Length: 102
Image (tube, rainbow, N blue to C red; front, side, top):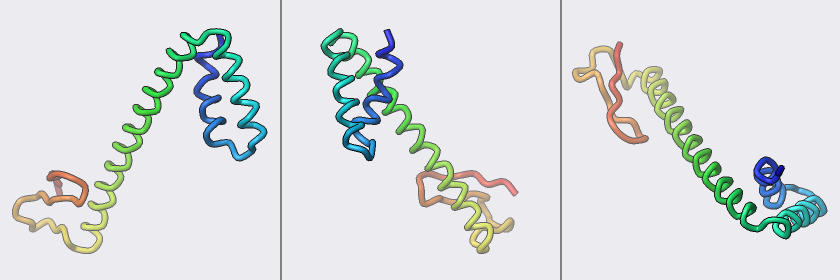
């Protein structure tokens, strides 16, 4: 059945499409799927939620990584981090110590 493939897009349309008519039509399609096989819809919905959580975690990890890179660049450009630094490491504003090799 097409439900596992289509459901993530239906959910996205229901919650974020700018056109209310499209949102209503999408809700009707989801209702038809629900009437056809509620158990499969529930199972697919759980998968969609798990995928969204994984995607959000990956996005957050990527944002933290870029923040670390930006901190490193900022410190290098503005002279806060120099090769004469005794420890060769510094604390970022994001989380823990980052070893810097120069």
